[in-house]
Length: 103
Image 1 (tube, rainbow, N blue to C red):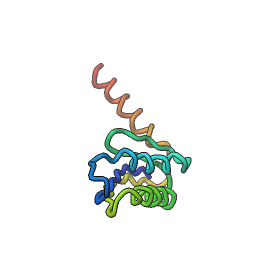
Image 2: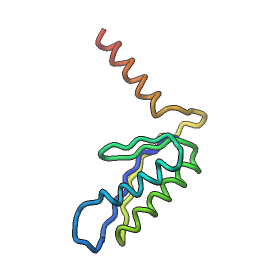
Image 3: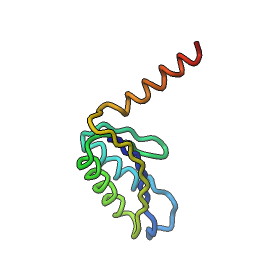
Image 4: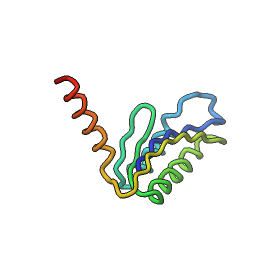
């Protein structure tokens, strides 16, 4: 499965709206998991089986929880049992389709 998720704290005591330190804590958890992952300006995407992916999402959420009294979690999942390498495979198929469309 592939899960794209975004985690943000709220209710922090410092009065700023910056969340980069909290996001860094979450991304550190994801990267240390060893699962295929990618982070962009809006989401972190991770690939693996159900239990391992959601264990990482939970740990990342807990890491962000240290930065505020409340945590917001948004996620989207693509669940395709038996498939691996889809984080890159989907993009490769898209690029091939674009090349065919330009021909």
